[in-house]
Image: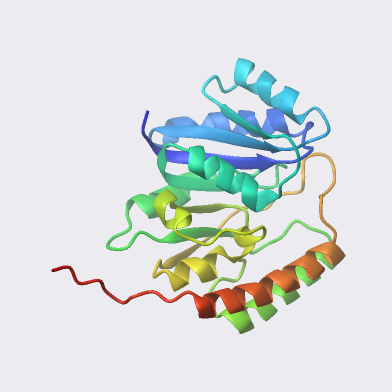
Length: 241
């Protein structure tokens, strides 16, 4: 079956958040085109997978559940889902309750009305519902990244994004790629559209990342992307005879 849109949610140890997030997603489907929902369980060690199976039985009968046998990271989880997806467009969001699925409706409207080259739409979190130290670390990281990559996005790591499946699959893939999609899409000639979204407090549980480990990994990835963009050579046009 072919869908207009695939909503992809990657989760790791989110057992308490699965059912409420699935309920929220179920309420917006009537306002979207033909849409499939895919959750990727990235090797959770709690009852996340059991909760997803419960959600499929009671809330989202058409839910597709993909499960890694161990934690592979968010970027690989996204790739797993997007390769298996059947939608022309992909919408991504987190499964901790901080993202509001209703924002996908407005983001889809932007995509559906785009003229010429379909854009990458990033749901930027202008008002973050995080603690002070995390907001400071994120603001510093975004400014430093923007200085090096010139990607034109104030919140490149925002989990809510909407893009064409085929555009995503053209990109080089590595763990951490999800934090640099604006720069990579720009390099491939895809325009950027930023849409302000609601950002809420996490429903339950704690973040899987600290400011320190995010900074260490993110810094290495950033310089890696700078190198990568210099190595990707694309033609301006291709003539056929």
